[in-house]
Length: 264
Image (cartoon, rainbow, N blue to C red):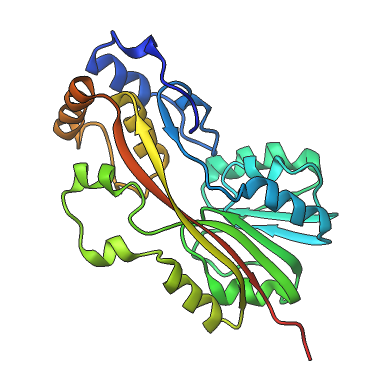
């Protein structure tokens, strides 16, 4: 989400904004609907560009939890063997339509299931915003000397927004996905850390419709979110935005690059 605010929604009622956003499809990772309605700063490292550079050098690549395949498909060149996994059926269909013309295979695989590939099948494994990194499986499918390159969601991401709906969350929720914990998990699986960088990035929501679409699309933020279940919180946030301007939150991202050590 990188757009500037638009006045198009300024005169619309709470009910109109919410009804519109509630009806928008949520499949894939295309965030163009937020144009003029929300912004999110981008990490300084430029994940998609850096991922594309590594794909250009790889011979066999796996993209885990690919969503609708949009990030993978943005790479100018894909290796001869390129595979992507995805667990949500609407995204599987969308990724298949997008990636098959590029010669990539999309495999339906639940996010918590073992990766359905042989040991040492890939020299590059990538992922943008995996729900959870399964380090033993990532290490298993990497060839000796192979690389895991990913952008992860960090701790307390957008919690200013989340806690408006849930109230204060326990510290263990806030500290989940911490880079130090993920480093430990990767090292325990036998991977060597090549690079690990973290940033917190400003987010702004200019209308309540953007909030509704965001929470429906990024389903792990407020699990079980529906307009009906959270109508009072939505109305109070709408009134706050109208009175004070954009609602500000902060996302957390970290760049993760790890390597399976080469054999002796």
